[in-house]
Length: 214
Image (cartoon, rainbow, N blue to C red; front, top):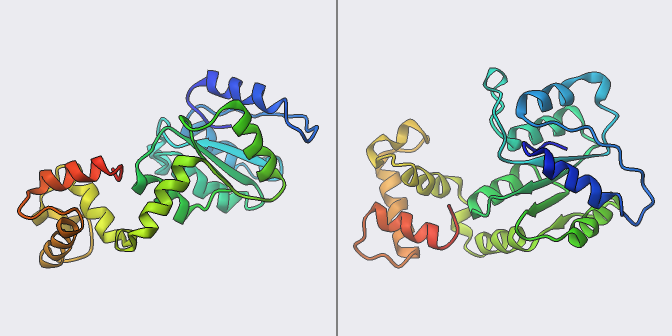
């Protein structure tokens, strides 16, 4: 279990002790990316973990370019491919959730504000049985993005995200591999989708936040 709040790990342990499968839960905790990195990459631990619980927001380990639970989940897939990954996060932004869904495909994916102790147990039981589990907000946001399939294009997501970070259009080619004219065309498409006729970049950001994208 990887979470920078020890009380959260203790809470998860307590809840899972009531699992319906009569499993004895043995937990190795990690509270930051550095300690988790060494647990994941230590070859002697590879067969040890049936399930890895990962929070997305964690203290980084820049020396190994590990900045979040997303990076750790990718390491788990590489070093412990048989382990099941359960992402537990406070993030509710659709772009963040969809990126994890697409790149990691975790067996379990739950937004912390969504689930009760009972739902966590249900998710755990289903995941251990070989199924996948998504909490309500995760599934709803993924469904919403897939219904508006142009937003699945990574360039659209990057443009909206960069605007929210205060990056000017003329500087965006430093971050994404397309031209300024291509960026302008995509921004026009975004405005059309958001029903913004003559709005500014600020209007795009406001509408994206209103829709829970960023």
